[in-house]
Image (cartoon, rainbow, N blue to C red; front, side, top):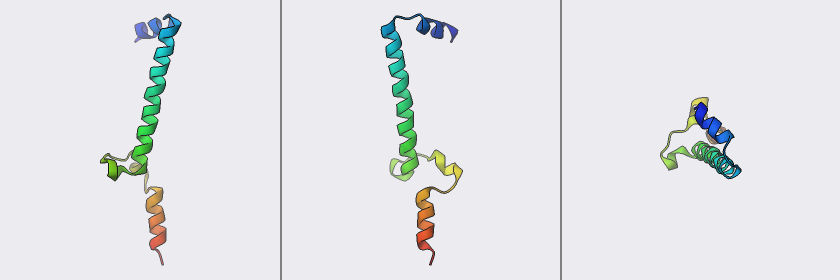
Length: 68
């Protein structure tokens, strides 16, 4: 790990830019993936990590609408 960080630190500017771009793309992909999972997990067939925190906003709205 130390070698990787050292080689990136002393790499030419072009390689640093590529490495930074790859990191940004990975982070953005994670954000989009979590956003998709939080929206409608059933349509994507994936587990919803936010489901562990309690009811979603849509479920709360449905519960309010069903009350007389």
